[in-house]
Image (cartoon, rainbow, N blue to C red; front, top):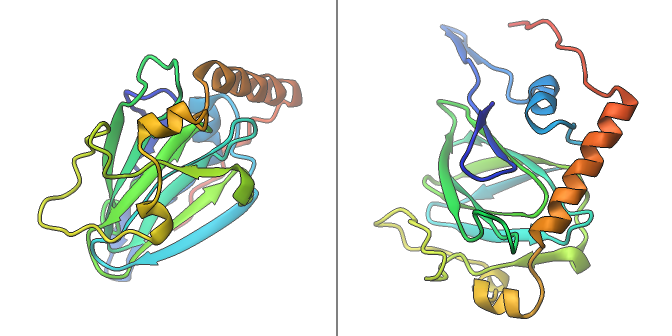
Length: 213
């Protein structure tokens, strides 16, 4: 897994095996995530969204603790996936990175608790699946407006963003910070340290299985 400039975010670039039958790849490998983050995902929920071209979802995040870590890939079409450091006090607070996820290169991203997540569909029927460390809990879920000029996310030119009513009504980053909605970096790092300690105590690093194609 490749570490990004934002602590707690990694990109997985799998080896894709192709032949005249199609292709095969491993889109999630627990040992690689454990090695990168120091703890596992703790899968609680798996989601799937299908979006028309131009659909913009996010920026979503959850209260920490417990937060919601995500492991995201695109199984059909293509999206521009964006993760944002919303942790107040973080050295990279307000920074964001974008990764193209598509059904060709088959990249995936892992986002630790406290990071914001958004994506824009670059194709019709763009299908995104993601594994979550915690189930959906409306009272703990929040958003920041994805078109906030203070974030200045470089969304693809030539596409008109299509937002849900909820995302269109989301506060700006400054408004969310003033309202006390954003996770604190110190709280998040304590949470990560606790997860690493628990994983070490449990001896939880999984074995690497043999690859089958």
